[in-house]
Length: 239
Image 1 (spheres, rainbow, N blue to C red):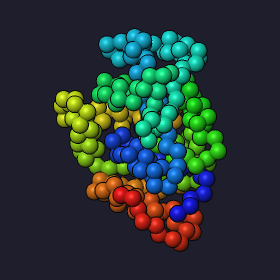
Image 2 (cartoon, rainbow, N blue to C red):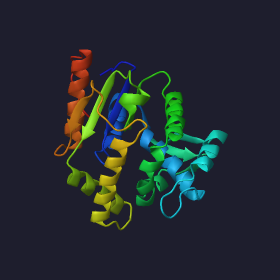
Image 3 (tube, one colour):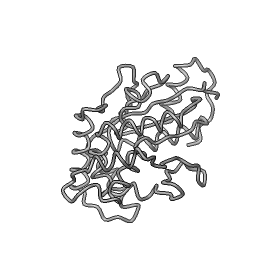
Image 4 (cartoon, rainbow, N blue to C red):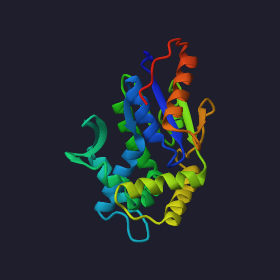
């Protein structure tokens, strides 16, 4: 099935599976997948490694701004069939997924100059369209004219369990109550920040995937695209 060269914006709460969903759609329909959350995590990792976040969580914003203004080489690269985030020649895809980075990413991403830095990068990567991108303000701020916008949500406890299982699968030893508390804190910060808060775009299609499998999500997306663009054929889905 041939989908037009459009931009698909996927927004929603943390641990709703936005990245997994976007990657699946990209693979199924031949789109370039861009993970905006990874960009914010990359900036957060750099800030942590350079000592710009103290033990109390306070961010040295002038130092961070100076680092971004000098030019931070964060970019996506196709690696073994996947889109991964690199800092220069160093793949940081695993490092940015730790709970330590998760605990600081929302305050960092709430800083206006950080959001401007990431937005500029995302616009650069998406020239020409045929891109699917996920985050928290893609359809409202980064690409308000995206042809298709999706807002993902799910039950809070289900999201916390998904995040817990993800950390365990990576060899970490998380505490469920800490994961849940971190998720609640991120939801609050993301929804109440001054710069581009998490909110549902008026023209977004809502997906509550609390009880959905990945295959059901893909079938849902297929139906949306067929209806949106008047596509009649129904190809076999890969998952």
